[in-house]
Image (cartoon, rainbow, N blue to C red; front, side):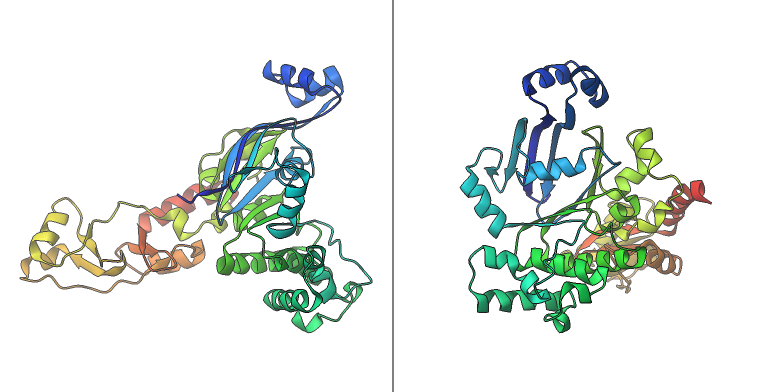
Length: 389
């Protein structure tokens, strides 16, 4: 389990002059609508508790007014909480002094908004370097760093252009570059791609996923789009009426929606398209052995299994051995192709269906994580596509 970057405990935000009254009503079980009817107060977030792990994309999702934008503004203290704790890297940002908060925002926390929020009179390079300028970095150094980030998002050739000369998708890349230039460990993205057309939106999702693969930042990403959440999210938190209704991986939420509100997000969506090998794999379906001597192989295959994967000292796949090979003095090692943990369903199907044995799933370092066979693929496709045919 990865260590938590953010820990939120009992976080509450009520917009109104008497928070104590509101908290009493909420403690008695009042809903957002009931609180408003009785007091005129607006409930933004209601006792939210969760953790965001280091290096993950944590997506906040919900309908308009569900509290997701308020929640991220509590995380970076653009809005002060009514109650609760927000701990980032061990510091409670709900309690730190304003000067510490400003320093945190300038050096280790960036935000990307739905509106591109670029300064029209400044060049692309100057816009990308703005956060570094605010932080007091000298011109030569900030432009060097900004240009390096523009290179990462594919905009280095446009460094001297003005925002008006760029398309919407390119302008949002500048906004992303500006956020990345300060090299934050935490990025907060509020509906960052929702103003783009579908093709540009997918393009920006690809840019974000590639950058995340290379840099492994912690990202909180607000979206109202289920398909976007399933595509980019390591985990998803679904909000309703200020409450967090469910938190889980895309596969966990697809497989076990908490209630009808969560289930309604899937109407008309072929959720299987967003599954990966990591979602489909089974962890203990195939026996594992570390020695090729006949005794070890026979011991591993003393049940109903016909084969076992052989792992080396680094937990990487060396191949597999079959039950038939037990008769030999030294069982023969057969080769097996591996599937990447993040391989999409389409790729998994084509490869698994071409093999009679299960295929091992490995992480980026080649370490064994689990296995996928034809039965597991068929089960998932049937379950997830049956409702959308």
